Length: 260
Length: 313
Image 1 (tube, each protein chain N blue to C red):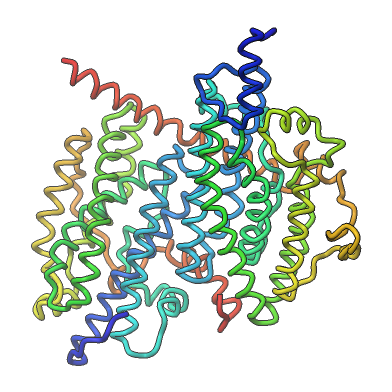
Image 2 (image 1 turned 180 degrees about the vertical axis):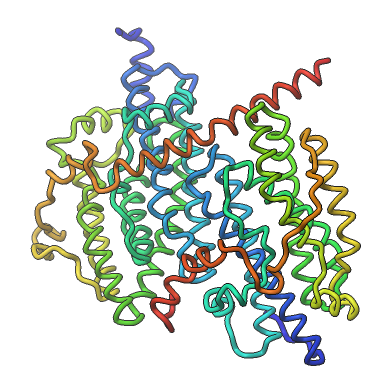
């Protein structure tokens, strides 16, 4: 288990906020992917999506455990996952969007993986060794995820007319939710100054480059729309998250204080 | 078809000597047909069986339970994959087998036509449904057809892990609050009889048993396995402090086995015929996944062809 590192109050609050964001983001995306289990388009890809979901849920557990330690209020990973409401969730909006068709799921995954991979890589240099260690572990998985989702974006973008059209639709649906991935908020700004997290402004060009290369190979055009939605990192979500949490948290809420 | 006498004799001898039959060996057509039917039915059961448990992945009550349940259902997909591959060695394609499932021609285990109504059902399915499956499947690790036997060795290892996980869910609930204990008892009440039906019809009404025993595809009869299962399960239920919903259940000193009450075979045959509580929903879910995935499979094939054409230039 982790041992808490001592920080000034303000920094510790920001670090906890960041840890919850990492945890919530992985959990919510893992949860969405797990909705595919038993319903995938090909048995092999059903299995692959469960793999991604399992990796992400595992990562979420590590981040929650560390968050609980830094928060120092005796909470468990499950308290943090199951007993916070939407306004307290810190995940980026992209990951809470419904799965849509397989193309939309794959594109959402790719946008996330392209950020996650570069971000984790930089996060392995974090001044907090607990954070760096989780990043090192997660990076191996994120590397595989990025490969999987890139390949599928290319395959579907450059597959048939129908698959190309569906990927264009997915791009229209998802694009405005990508900006938040690499836009720092106050938490990021403080933690970057403290040397605990990488500067998202430096991650953005890496993300853009990755996206350009893959979308070009997929024969897909990047939308030239500039407006980007944001809010998840500060607890202001889409309408979808409340339903996801209602389902996920149902047993813990209906039968409080039980062991499962 | 009349078999060449030498080939038939060689086959009979190999089976009698407990040697494995392999894909390229000669085999009688009815043996091949029986295997394709049984293995594909088994594969379909794994795939359809993902649905009732899949229901609860998004509602699992802790992160650990969520991960364990998801991994379990994923294992079932993996079992489906090995079994389809084993059946393909007999000359029937996966697409053909899946079409037969979707058209209703091929069957799958009736147990998956029952609904999963509470979290305790995840415990009971692991404990009893996987437990019954293990009773059925362990002897299949020695079945005469090589690829099937090898697939079963891998599957049985994972199944016994699943069974322990299920029993652990039951133990947690049994030690939990009153509401949790009630949830566990309710799940046992609903699943007990359908689980006993998983072993199939009584021996004198099982049309396929005799030949399958002779070919060493099957190693024990349905009734033998059912008895073995009841004997193993009663003490486990006692340990949990749960009541098996059968007033006739009692230890028979003379037989050295538990006696149990009559099974409602009308219900069994109704579910087999398609009238179980979820038959329609399960098949619809499978068909829907397949139909909605058609464009993905077409795109993957088209892309692979483009790549191939490029590399040949």
